[in-house]
Image (tube, rainbow, N blue to C red; front, side):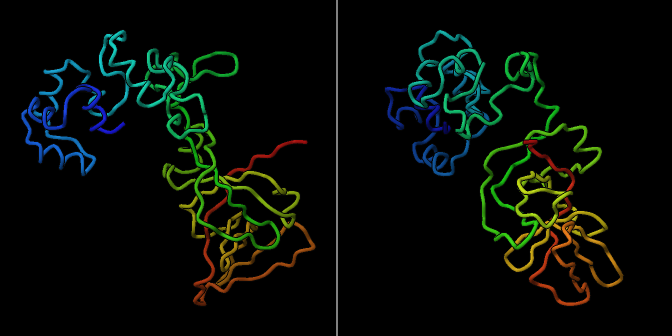
Amino acid sequence: MTFKSRLQLLWPDSTLEDIASKIDMSYMGLNKVFAKDGLPKAETLIKIQEVTGCDLNWLLTGKGLPFADKSRPENVKIQEVTGCDLNWLLTGKGVPYLDRARPENAGAFPVSDPAAGAVDTLGNPVDLREFVFIPRYSVEAAAGHGQAVNDEKPLFCMAFRRYWIENYVTRQTDKLSVIAVKGDSMEGILNHGDNILINHAETEPRDGLYVLRIGNDLFVKNIQRLPGRLLVKSANPLYEPFEIDLTADNTDIAIIGRVEWFGRTVN
């Protein structure tokens, strides 16, 4: 819900000219705020709060309810405008939309009050601040022949313990992603269908598992660093090792990141 929508919710029967007059703004000035999808000055926001009695946090962010009195009709009006779940709107429990795939549901549970939101499978409250939510992409890193790289949006997020991530992987949590393995060249270490956590901050290879881009293809391989070159190995002996010359101008080759973790479904 935009700031413009919030104002129109406070004054549903007023024109924008009328609203501007009520909050001591010019019509043109108010339109400029709307055009930039921004907020007016602090004194204007305070004026709106004083005139309407609305909740200032809701006015600033759109989160929560317009008025502390949950029975006020303006609170119910939000449900009509947005199509959100009325129980969530009134109580803060559950998710904003019954369609759980909607992106607005992400982060719906209030982290400051775990008991009011997320719970584990036994109903115990969960503090979401203890977790890092890392995007899982549909891109696959080929453990075999190359898998093409495309611009992708994440399918969903995977939760990892924040303590483990920040103390054993990286504090640059925005440099992490999860993708899947495709193929059999790393069979026995990484199997087809495994999820792998990639640390994109680690692009200077040491010995270990890395995701490489060669041309427009992604590979996950075991890398051994040698003087002036990288030895790229597979776990499956059917795939021959190859070398990358670090002294050459390898514009078609890049280290995407280090593999820090994998997850596997046991059939």
